[in-house]
Length: 174
Image 1 (cartoon, one colour):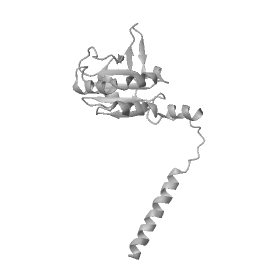
Image 2 (image 1 turned 30 degrees about the vertical axis):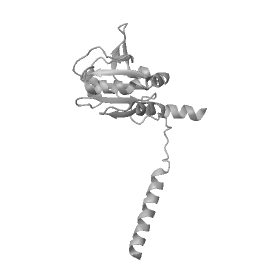
Image 3 (image 1 turned 135 degrees about the vertical axis):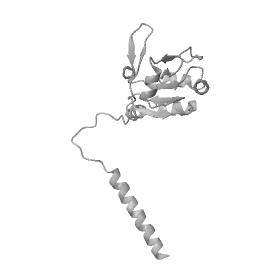
Image 4 (image 1 turned 120 degrees about the horizontal axis):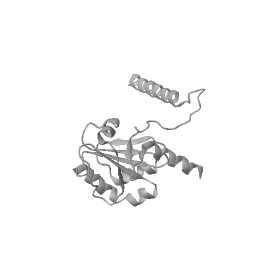
């Protein structure tokens, strides 16, 4: 029994020292210029005036990207229903909603304003969505904060937007 306790104590000490070693800051001659861990792949869409816009032009605003086969797909409709309850709060955060359709374009049956990406298949490929539905939450800093192939609850999307690094940094400065 004493040997087992001794081995357990050694294991705990080993894990603790490993965690401390990982947590120590790494010396570097390069200044950290960005806190973006995974930059969201860029894509474009046409403005009503014909001008082409890119995702990078939305830096400073959170973006919700929905990838679906068509505006009539069941998962797309389910995600719209989830958004309906929290959209006013998301709009107050400056959220921009973008849809990328991989098979069939069409009118989006919602009062939530959406921009439609120019080539949905290219967007799906860039986000490594093989088929079906996906939702991506892109932070104000351009970081891909969440990518899911499942419908996300509206509150979860709000929490992701509200808890992004840039939002937290701004709150710390107040």
